[in-house]
Amino acid sequence: MVVNTSDGSAWVNKRFMWNAGHAPSYARDIQLEIRSQDDRLLTYDCKANAGPAGPFDYVFLMPGEFIGSDLDLTCAGLKEGERYKVAARFRDMNDSVQLQPVAPRLDWELVSEPIEMTFTSPPRK
Image (cartoon, rainbow, N blue to C red; front, side):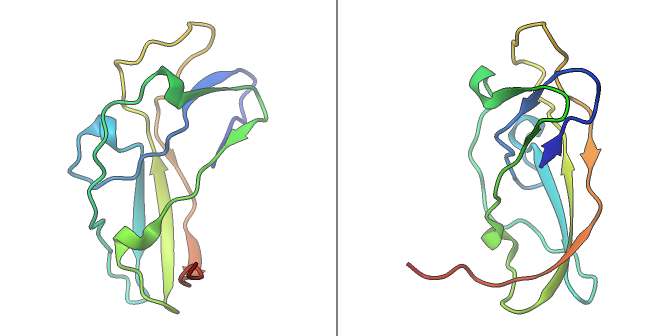
């Protein structure tokens, strides 16, 4: 989740694309650092095929507003019942998008505090 804690408005990339670290910068808005109980860094094992974010991938956030997204963590190889430490980095490195010049585009890196979680599989449908 990204919260606008500033006094001004900003354009924010809302697609929250999670991709491998070696993917082109325009195709990875989110990078997750997921560590196992034994402090082993897990890797992203899927491939997201995406181009640069377009104008419709952006939302105009006023002060105090927020935007977020659910991420599917199955590509990280998490194991049922195990504990993990997760930290997120968000950075929109898409310099090619054209937006209305009424506010800046959030293009600097945001880093979360790590959280600890126990992985449980979603219920089968």
